[in-house]
Length: 151
Image (cartoon, rainbow, N blue to C red; front, top):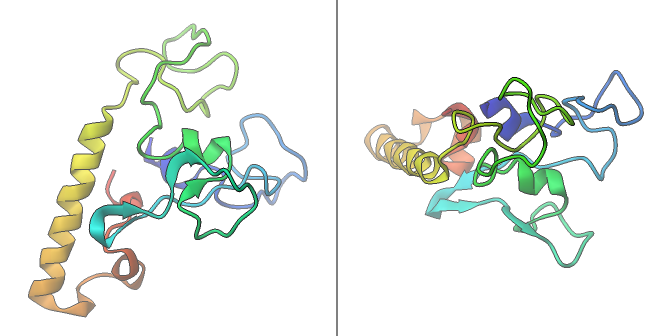
């Protein structure tokens, strides 16, 4: 589900002050994650690899917590979950917020997603060349390709 890839734990929870299992929003800076964006040149704003520094800027190209790694477009539902699933869809431990696949139908093809990203990036680049800078919304202009619009 693209909503989990691009929005899970990216906004502060307004209903709870402490972490609630299954809550879609973050409750502390440790849970918070950045939205993944694919920039011009086909580089992500961050990659699903743990930052060795720890506390650094939001411009750091590495992940700062497990949420940024597990819910990154290159990782989400890319491997099977170790926990049981009675219905083959929901994880019995974390429910529908589990970033791992629960059956082969739930398993995502990471190369397919990346190829879709590249195709959309190239389509947007061609659109900009054809129609000029006003062809894309302002947010897309900055990155040329933000995956949250395309899956």
